[in-house]
Length: 325
Image (cartoon, rainbow, N blue to C red; front, top):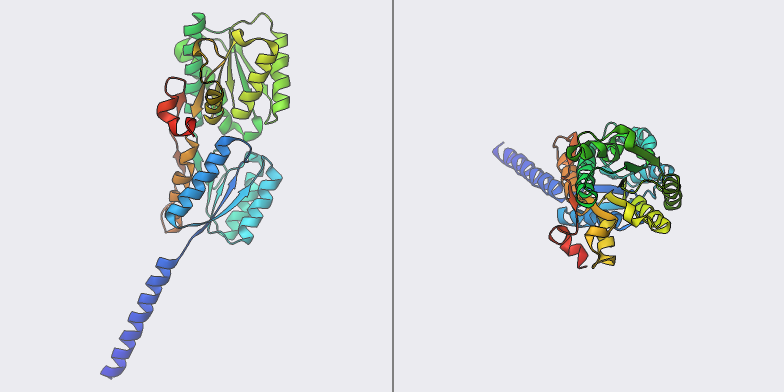
């Protein structure tokens, strides 16, 4: 009887050790679908995901949503087919979020939504209200320095397809402006909904400038880098550089501008700042959060990055690694 008991105990011990080994060898498979891979910030996000996955020993499945909601849905289907354990979604088209979440919920796959919220997913990314406010403060400060007072108008160039939450990074700019000019009127705020197409944006901004020849102090807030580049092109084509200042949401378009124009004087240039989202840290934040959830941790409702405005004065300190790359 003792011999049988010893054998049973030995088997239990072996099975326990094997189970522990299997648990230790479990390698999570995490999918990441990028918003697009057309501009530097998107490449930085992807590379950060790859680096974080390698650091954590995670198998990473990559996809590119290409600014296309239908493509995002197809990519979600592909992630499920490939058997991902967790999914990190970066998709600009808010309207397909419910479709993607229904698929992921049915498959039992936890989701982190990057920048554009999806109901049922943890939200990671911008604190859009803060991002909008700090941009507005910067525009107000430069208006005061350059023109000695408030601008003739605040032109906000946005992309409504991203949804109301993300649009706060533009719609909250007047709030920031009022930290400098408390009586800045809503009547001075204009909106252009250009979408993500650069040519459309350039034409719409050009039309605005043509329709307002008497405005010589125009503060402009741009929803993202693509829109900012197109807006700057419209200003330069119209010969209205001395009439305009611009701050863009996102940092890499502005950093590229600094690299291309290292010797410009900030006192007379249009593009005077970019709100930093620190995209190089996205992978670190989201991969760690997802691995924690897969290991039994609780999924947080929101994970926010911090924001500050990058200018010529602080760009080297914050992003010297990029400017020198």
